[in-house]
Each structure stands twice: as C-alpha cells, then as structure tokens.
Image (cartoon, rainbow over all chains, first blue to last red; front, top):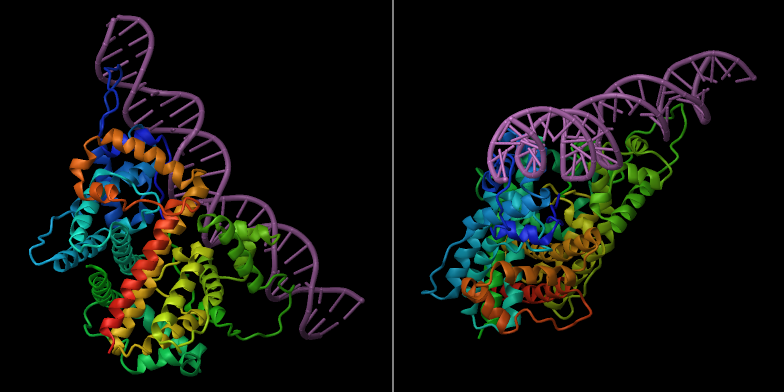
Length: 259
Length: 259
DNA sequence: TGGCATCACTTTACACCATAAAGAGAGAGG
DNA sequence: CCTCTCTCTTTATGGTGTAAAGTGATGCCA
C-alpha cells in the first residue's frame, strides 16, 4: 500500500505542515480538546506498532478516546495526516555531519543514519515520494545531504541526480527489510521457516532447476547465498550487506565523477 | 499499497506458478468456463489500465463476465493471483544480452530494459519483494543478470549483493515515476500544475526559505533544478536522469571492485 | 436413460475502510 | 440568559476480501 498525499485544499495542507496558523478569530462554541501534535503523535504510534496497513482513522481516534470522525475537525483527510506524520518523524533523521575527513565518510554516515531511520519507521517507505510532502523537516534533511554533496564538486545537475540516486537506493533496499518484517508479523511465519518450506517445494516443482537456471545455480554452489550470521533473519542480513556494498559502489562512482 | 504474496497452501501456490498440474481425476459436475491464464491476463489488464489500487476481485471477475467470487474456484486468494500476475508479466522483461563488448554495456542494456519494463507495468513495483514470488520467469530474469555479473569476476558474496543493489536501485527510482503517474491520474492534476501551486505556497509559508535551507537554495540558484526538456513531466525527466547517472555511478563502483 | 453427487458460479453476509451528512449537546460571546 | 456555533458522535454510502449458503447445470454411473 502506497499512501498518497492529501488532495484537499493545498493552502490548508501547507499551513498545517509549516504551522502557519490561518486567521484565528475569537469564536463561540467549545474549544477543541485535542491538538494536531497529539493526533500526529498517536498516528505515528499506531504506524510504528502495527504498520501502515493498520493505520485507520478509527484506530488513531480510539487511541485518543475519540471516534475516527472526530479527527476530521483537525485534519482535512487521512492524506494530510500522513503528510504530517511523515514530516514529523523525518525530523529525527536530521543530524549535521562533519566534513573534516572529506565528504565520503560524512555521506556514509548520513546513509547509515537514513538506513537506521527507515528500519525504525518502516511505514515511512510507504509514503509516496512522487509528490513530495514539502514540509519543513524534509527540507532540513535534504539540505544537509546537498550540503555534503557540494563538497564533491559535482556540477549542479549531477548533484541533484546523485542526491536522488542515494535517497532512492537507500529506500529501495530498506523496503525489502521493511516488507520482510511486515510479512513475518502479518503471517506469523519467520523468514527461515518460509524459505525452508518454499525451497523444498521449489526443488519438487523444478527438479531441473540447475539446468534451467545455470547462473543462479552456480552462484548458489559457490556460496553466494551463504549466511554469515545465524542470529539475524536471512533477508535482513542479505539486505544489510546489499546496502553496504551498493552504497560503497555508488560512492565510488560519485568519487570518480567528482573533480 | 504493497501487495503481499498469498499465504494459502504453499504447495498449491507453487503448483500454480510452475504450472505443475496437481492430480487430475475425472469428476462429475460442470467444467470450468475460464482458465487461469485468462484470469491472470484480465487482472494484468485491469492493473495496467487502472493501477494496483483498482485491482479488485470484483473488477477482474466483471471483465470476464463473472462475479468476483467466481475467481475463487481458480485461485485460492487475491495474493496468489497477484503472484501469478507478477510472474506472468515479468516474462516480458527477459532478454539475453551479448557479452561481446564486456559486461558493462550488457548490464546497462539490462537496466534500461528493466527501467522500461517497470514504467510499462508500474503496479509491479507494488508487489512485495520481501518474500519473492519464486516463479519460473522471475528466475529466468535473475539468471540472466547473474550470468552477466559473473563476467565481472566479483566474488560470490559481492556478486549477490551487487545484484540486489542493481535491482533495488532501479526499482526505487522507477517507483518515483510510477507514483507520479498514479498521482496525476488519480487527482487529475499534472506534475507541473501541482508543483506550480505548491511552490507558490512554499514561498508564502517560508519566506525565509533561502536562509533556512542554504544548500538547497544554492543548488536551485545554480540551476540544479532546471528542466532540459519542456515536453516531459518534470518528475519523470528528473527521475530518468537520476536513473542514468546513478546507474553509471553504480557500475563505476562495480568496475572498481571487479578484478 | 434416469438419478444424483458434484461442481461452477451467484447471492448474501460480515467485518473492515474513508468519509459525507445529519444529529446532539455543550461552551462561549453578546 | 439566549442562541449561535463548534466539537464530537451517529448513521449511512459505497468500497474492499472472502466465508457461507444457495442454485442449477453437468457428467458419471447404474
């Protein structure tokens, strides 16, 4: 499930994100009993604990002792709530990095932090990137990477492209882990059990596997799929290695292109 | 929306994928009026035309002149149908690549083909990768990349990691385009209109933007966000450039690590 | 050929979802 | 104090996947 940004009144969405209070005149009637911050915090708790699929207006409302509908006096729709969740939680991914040893260790540290952040809040990966949320904290994070990348001396167009490549690469690999965890939680089957059952069936269904897929078979034979740490689920371990190796390769490429 | 694999009887799922007919005895009663292939084809049409969010059992059934429930005599659940859709459609991403000029042009061509494939069937990006579908066509595609990568001389572990990095990178960047298209279709607002409205609001909400985000401002000033082709939606153009540059960088890194 | 078990397919039902619309009730400005 | 107005709840609508039950045609066997 990819969750798209709210499509309501754009001005109201942006005002919510940037906390620009729209004209506040004294009005009769009861005051609101909740705050947007409290709602967003509750929603983040739900998403962290049960995943994006479990994030419903009812669930968030109930956590605050209200019905789901009550939230609609605070937020135009679920989309805007997700935008706010995203921009709130991404704030914790912000750090400033020391450029003393050059841009490579700084960018590596940034990527590792983003990796850890995504694994801490996997639902973030399900917030669509197509129409960026454009909230303040997203820009804070973006600004820091761009600052680091300016150190490479890449020309502006390449700099933007490389920024996107780094972000999408980290997201892409993190998604595998996030989905693996969601699948384990949702089905109650561990990666190991699942793979064990599936690979047995695979040899049953395709007894000629090694002939049909010689390269994969050769890779398996030469130990390409061997686990090095038995205590970590296979998918997570493999993804982490993929992340580290891919990141290093990507940075090699940036280095070669930087002047 | 991420769609997870079917969790029904694993043997039946695999038998469906690998077209291994389970014991067929003569039985009384009417014969089935549809075939799995027809159902899968109809489902792919729905997903191609209206996106994954519009893929419902009812929608697929109606396209075949049945109710949604009718499909359950063919397929244990929606998850298995999606698995079948995935493994069917990925077959068209298969090509064999010439290694005559070395692995780099071959891998570049492969990545470009995958990129085009994902943009042709954006819904594929919403099929979870956590628990791979493990169908025959997926292995055909995988086998070819692995074959190409063996030419780099990387050690087996690095080879597997680099395979994952390439796949996830292409998927990650393609996702941006796919989501942008889905957003445009769903909201009826083009990227350009959306961005135009949003950026106006942005300067309104954050008049001190350039002070708060100096690196991004500097990048903008130096032309980092300038479009080169006015006829292509901005997001798509930017993502395509990101794909090309990131891929080249990644391959640089592989080259450096290969012996 | 007749009977009938069995299957394909439909209908109905259930528990969810977002959210529109309407109702209830309390708070606060005048 | 009156009454307007706003918060919050209730109800309703149209959607989802799929369980369970109903319908009727089919094809095996006697």
